[in-house]
Length: 239
Ligand SMILES: *Cc1c(COP(=O)(O)O)cnc(C)c1O
Image (tube, rainbow, N blue to C red; front, side, top):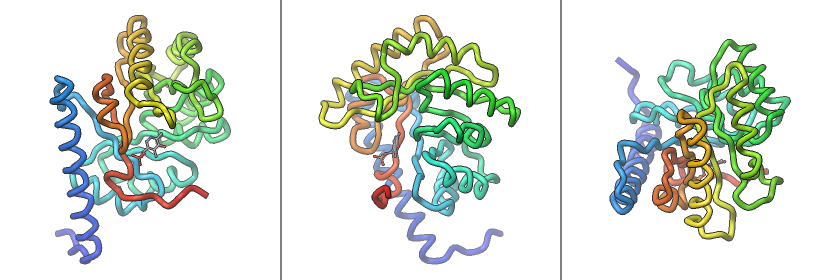
């Protein structure tokens, strides 16, 4: 039998369970409003800044999709959670010199915005003998400093990813820009996703929507949500 949980762990488990229920309810309500089937939506839980013990509790609550954002935190946490049946997503910006490390643990990388990064990830995937699903991250505000390829660059980048060993082109990802109605931004993303899928039928993932804007994302065709604070609580500010 598993050892008994401390009261603190049991309290945290209950808190995570209640937050997961609330998010699933939001997803159901938004899908109903959009005439979509909630079974087709994948909620990825973003655990960055939270401890491996939270990933363990989430897995115990049935969570199977977990995201991390930064090295070396991600590699360390994945290592501590190797026994858990979860799929790992990388949603943060990947520096090229970290690509090999990320390729060692990520099943899906959401943040590929250049052919140079795709090439580095492909080399990393081959080094580790792994296959990685890749989403092309799209900049919806035209500010490349925040990451993401411009819409014009998507076709060439998608072809590059498709041709690289160890990578599979799986779809697109975006973060809604600040100060813009997320419905407008996600509507643009949907158009880009539709164009990509016309040439690459297997690239059917649309990763959009976070704690604050998942309803807008679901209204615009998101298939994968990336939810952190609504499930785990407020993160400490980035240093
Ligand atoms: C942190 C992060 C999230 C989760 O954000 P919340 O607002 O906490 O839900 C989603 N996507 C990306 C790219 C992130 O870095």
